[in-house]
Image (tube, rainbow, N blue to C red):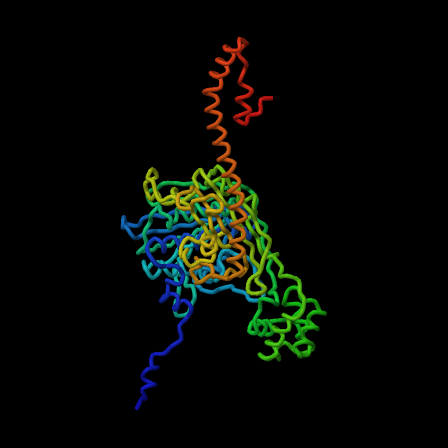
Length: 522
C-alpha cells in the first residue's frame, strides 16, 4: 500500500530549463501584448548588433513586422543582419537551447548575458502560434542554409524540422518568428521607440524598420567607427564568493592553490597569492581540487586584508562622450546637448562598471515625441524623458524599480532651473558592465546597488550643471534682446529730439544699440 508521501511525489519529475521558462515566460519579458512583441525585436536586434561587432563589421540591421492573415494579433517578425553568419552545426544550440555558452571564469561586456534571449523568442513563437522559427544564414562561402527550428522543451534542445540549401552570394543571418497574442503600436513601449533608442546609443548602427502598414523608417548611422571589441576579464578577488573559487578550482589547469589564485584571478601576482595563502592558513602548494569550503572561505576573507590594484576595465566598452553626442544629435536634433563618460567604479566590492550620461534640451527632446501614438501630428505628454540603457541596449520596461530611475528621482531639479514636468528634455543614462545586476531574466531593470545609484546620481548632476549654464546664458540672451528692442524703439527718438534741442547734428546711435544688444560692431 502506497504511503501519502508516495502518492504526493508520484508525479515528481525534473524540469528542463526550457520547460521552466515555457511555464514562466513572464520572467523573460513576455507580459502584455505590446511588450511581448517589443521583447522579440529587442532580443533579435541585440543578437544582430553583437554578432556584427564581434566580427568587426559595421552593423546593418533590418527589422520587418508583417501582419499574418490580416489577424490583429498575429505577426511575423523578421530580423536580418550583415554579420558573419552561423555555421550550420551551431544553429540548433543558438536558437533552440537555453543558457548555452555561458562562462564563469571570464567576463566580457555584452548586450545579452543570460543566453536565453533568442531561444526565448523561438519558444514564445512556438507556444503562441505552434510554428517553428525560420533561420536563413550564410557564412559568405556562397552557400545559404535555410532551416525551421523548434525547441524540444523536455530536453532543452533545438530540433531541425526542415532544411534546404541553395547557392547565394550573401553573408549574414535572417530570423523569422511567427507569434500570436501580440500587438503593434507606435507608442513609448513599442518596437519603433525601442529602435529609435537603440540608434541613439549605437550611432554606428544603421537600422531599417518596416512597420505592419509598410511604412519604412531608416535610422541612419551617425559614425562609421566600429566599437573596439571588449576583452574577456578574469574575475577580481574582491568580487568572488567561496563557491566561485571552488568552481574555478575544479576547472583550472593550475597545479597548486597559489597558481590557481595568480592565473585565474586578476590583479593577483605570485607574491600576493602566497601572502593570501599564508593569511588563510592554506598551503600554497595544495592541489586546487582538494580545496575545502572552509579553506575557500578563509581565502576569500584573506583577500580583503591585502592591497590589490582595482579591477581591470579592459572588458568594458562604453559608448564614449563624442559618439554619444553624435547619436543624440542625429536622432533628437536638440538646441543643447552635453555628454560625459565617468571613470570606472566598482560595486559589491569588485565588479567594475562605467556610467555615461547625455542630456539634451529642445528640438525633438522630451516625452512629446514618444507619446504621439500613430498620429504624428498629435500632441502627447510633455516633460523630461528618461531613457535607460545597459551595455547600449534600451531598458524600456520596469522603469519604476530601476536603480537609474531611483537616482534621477532623488535629484532636486529646481536647483538647475528645470521643471521636469514640462521641459523639452531627454536624459540618457547608460551603464556598461560585464556584470549588469538585472532584477530579472527580462533584463529591463537594474538592481538598486548603492554604488550604482550614487554614481548615476553624481553623473546626472554633473550633466545638469552644464544644462543650467546653458539655460542661464539663454535667459540672459533673451533679456538682452528685450532690452535692445526697447532701446531700438526709443533711443533714436530721444537722440533726434535731444540733438534738435541742443542745436547739433543728430548722432549715429547704431554702434550704441549694437553694444546694448551684445553684438560686436568691429
